[in-house]
Image 1 (cartoon, rainbow, N blue to C red):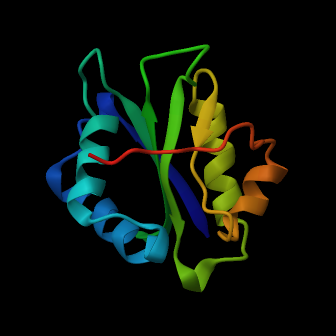
Image 2 (cartoon, one colour; image 1 turned 180 degrees about the vertical axis):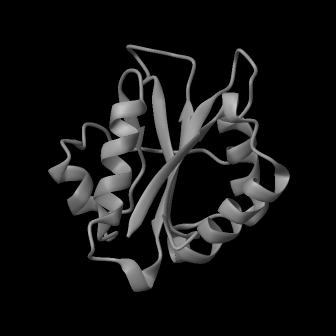
Length: 146
């Protein structure tokens, strides 16, 4: 049976907890992922007690093992920029197609105060889930990497 759990700044996640989540995301994000150090920075931000940072993590576990994870960061803005950005979501490849991603997303949408933005590659199969949940593609994202 899949159990959802959440972490936020008030939970004071340990390094080992964050490392377990980062390892899972690094492995299961695959081609859509980032280096583990970047994932750890995102977790540090999401679980920071500071006034300028914050967010939360939603985990799906089966028999104690992570089978799905989501990291949401607060942006500290509203209106012109959504209040939240969904940075990472992944489901164990062996568990996909069982509704775990939808359960995690439903929980995250309930927990988030304000609008949510996310970045998804056009060929990512998760794009269909986001559209079913009401996400729309309003903008073309462009970046300048310096």
